[in-house]
Length: 312
Image (spheres, rainbow, N blue to C red):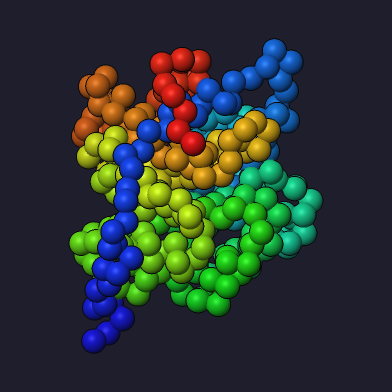
């Protein structure tokens, strides 16, 4: 039997209680004071954007921008794409094609670092991931960065050794590569797959897909019931990475930890997709950039609503 034929063992699915995700009320903790400044909303850096894949990085930036991060810097690996975006000049785009990863990250000192959207999987991409794993704050690992971890298993120990929160956001294919099994094995037993990913990494894990699952060591797994098939389009996961980054960054200056910020981000992202559907924007043709804008509306509605009771 080859590694790709492995079946997810169900052991970690036995007797596990799950909860339906109900986290939007946590947004009230992010309410801003009258004298708030951009530093209170946190500094986010997102790394990625190799040649031909700059769109994923830009979409992650939009997710962070419309979800309230105070400052957003995009480390763009593609030299030709590292220029101002006239539609979103708020995004600070840096050409990192010839930068030393450790030096560059030390200079920029983000509150929250995300890596993976359009990163690529070459030697230089691995160097950026190695540097990111030394980041002293919350770290979101997505997309190509997850594939690099799957291909270089020694990186798992570095993930486990991190003192600050680490958040992994695999879709079923990426989860299969991390667990050395086929995608269908992940889909056949998603809760068990989540458990194995948590055991493998000791991190917060978002297993994306229909009814996305959120789990972490010593936390009850959460199942997101929001979302719709219109969200099955390119870039949706990149926007989610940006949203998680922004909420984690704001949470560091408010009473919202990385677990809570991740749960809020997953529900916010899915609810934004449902909002678009209700507005007849989709399901066919719904785009990730539209969802980022919808997330802003949902977040502000939730932030200043007293109709929810925050989940702990």
